[in-house]
Length: 457
Image 1 (cartoon, rainbow, N blue to C red):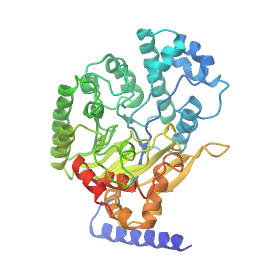
Image 2: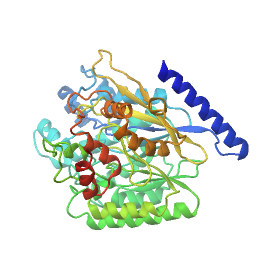
Image 3: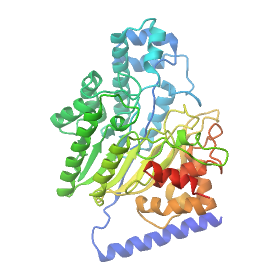
Image 4: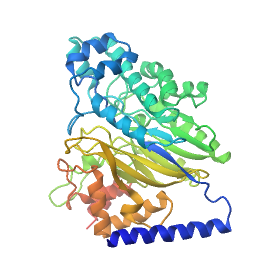
C-alpha cells in the first residue's frame, strides 16, 4: 500500500512539473510514441525433424503452413533456442501491444546457435550450397513473419553474431550473406523506408546502414558490431575502420542538420559480464576480464560519441539475452532475448519517447513465464513504477539508478530479479558476483572495470 501511495504521489508531482514547464515554454512535449524492441530470437527451424525435408524443398513463402502442421505445439523451454511456437507467440504479443505510428527495433541474432552443424546433421552431408540456401530461406522467412505481424511499422535491425553463412562471429565484409539478404531485409524489415541505393551501398559492404522513419527528424544508425568483437574474422580490421569512418561522418551530418539519433547494434561495448562472473575467485577478486569489443574500436567509438552529446538519445543493443543497461556516454539499453537458451524467460520491451525530441521516457518489459502451464507474454514490470526515480527522461533516470544499485537494497533487489526476466535459478546473481554486474554498467575500459570490481567492498 505504501508503494502504491508513493507511485500515485510521484505521478501527481510529475504531472504538475510537466504542466508547469509547458506553461512557460510552448511545445516542450508534443505527445509520445512507442518503440518496440525485441532481440536474440535465435529461431530454430530444426526443432521438428519430421518436417525438415519438407522445409528443404519448399519456398520460404510456404514455411508458415509447414510449421503449423507440426505436432510440436509447446514453445521452447529454458536451455533451448526459439522454436516456431515461441516465435509465433512472441510476434503475436508484439502485434497485440504495438500501437499505430510505432517504430520497431531488432538488434540481431535471427538464427539458432550452431546452424550449420544442425543442418548438416539432418541433411546427411556437408553440402555448403544446400546449407546456405536453407539459411537464407530461414532469414527471409523470419523477416517475412515480422513484417506480417507489424504491418507498416519499420523494423530497424542490426546483424547478430550468428547471422551469417560463415559461422558464429565470422561474417566477412562484402560477403555473399550480405548480398543475399540485402533486398529481403530492405523490404521486410525496413519496409523500404531507407534510401535504397544508400542502404545497398553500406549494407552489402559491411552490414551497416542508416534510415529515417517516415515523417520524423530521427536518424537510426545501425552498426555491425561483429567487426568490433575480439572473436571477429581475422580479415575484418579494415572493414571495422571503414565502418567507424562512416559512422563518424554520418553522425556529424545528422548533428549538423539538427537530427536526433538512435544507434542500433548487437554487441554492447564494455565488459563481457557473463564470462567475467565465472572468472572471479572465492574472495570475489578479478585478475583479468573479458571485454565485448576490441579496445581500439571501442575507444574510437566512444570518442566519436563524445563529440555529439546532444545528438544521440539512445543506444539499443542485445546479445547478452539479459535485461540490463550500460552508461558508456549517455544511456544504452540491452533488451532481453526471446530465446530462453541461457536460462532466462523470453522477454521484450516497449519504450515510450517524445515525438519532438525522440528522447526516451519509460518502458514496460513483457515476459513469458515458462514455468506456467499456459505460456503467454504478459506485462512484467514498468520501469518508472518499479524504480520510482526523479526524472522524466529515461537516460537521466538510468544515471540516477546506478549509484542506488550499490547503496540501495530495494533497487538492487529489483535489478537482480529483473535481470533474467523472472527466471534466474540457473545463473543466480549473488552477493559475491554482484560487483561484476554493477561495474559493468559504468566501466567501459578493461582496467577501470577490473579496478571497480576489486575495489567494490
